[in-house]
Length: 446
Image 1 (tube, rainbow, N blue to C red):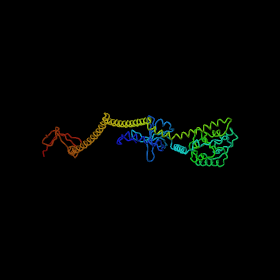
Image 2 (cartoon, one colour):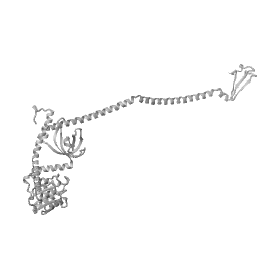
Image 3 (cartoon, helix red, strand yellow):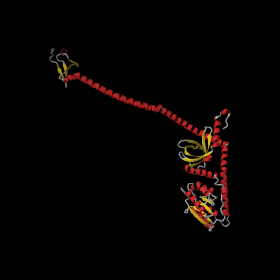
Image 4 (spheres, one colour):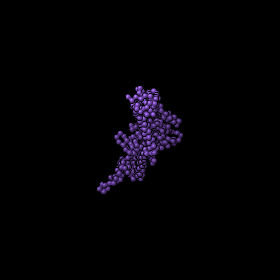
């Protein structure tokens, strides 16, 4: 790390130096983890976090890379990714820039395949210098495959059509599943012990990566490499590639092509062409493996000065700012919505309609109280009237009349003294029941 004067760095210089160290010394790695917080902004890039039970790391997969992913990643999914360690300088976060992504199951097999291929290539098992030549005049072919598989029927059919004189000896074995690699190694050992054939054809039909996995075995690779008999590998379809194809002396794309390669037609031109193409293919593969390390080293050096990396940094910064802006806008919108609701509630509380409704309820309440008060007052007044009437009735002259007394009046004046009357005066007497009119005939003053 080149230091500035007095070892004083700016933040940008420090982040840049750390990025160069990570990219130059660690480079590309395989990583297995669980996806979380995946997002895909309008730029088309992917941003996600890979985590296990204890740690996590941020990842970015740019548009040009994620278009090759054959599935849609979702949160919680286990994946195997390949990428380069780098640093996102604006934020000082180290991250993984993804180049490929596979579901965890397929990805682990692919990773094991690549690791074994690089190991065996370093040991020289794929070298073209050690490849054995296929005999010109083949009399017997040893076929290592399943005795009931379609591959054996195709081989026998091709050989019967092209060269019926070739004798076929089958070394039956399991070509799929657990223990198949060991059984194939035993079949190769048996053929080398007997030395009854001119060449071995290791074959089976097509299948998935798991179906063909027994042909990606290190022990099988050494068994093929150490075989005294030349070995032709014809495993799967033309697009399938296994470790046995790299180790074998010749690789045929299909079982039928392997049978054609080992048999002769009229001009024998097709076989020679297939052989030359197979050797060319093996040479190209070996050269590619030799240059792989050099290419990786140069790629790391290029990444230190690659303009595209800086552009990706700017794009990632843009996506980050866009997502922060969207979050801020959503937060602001939420606050405005809450404020609008509060103002709406206050307006509702102060609106004439609400006030009128409240006053109407209050008037109704006052009216009810007034009616209740009036009713109470009337009842109380009625009780007082009844009490007064009772008292009045108690002192009423009518009450006195009911006890046998009477009231006498003259000229509408009550007579309480006999001296106020004269003989011949007409008087009226009020009784309890009815009244009497009388003429005074005698006056007594006692």
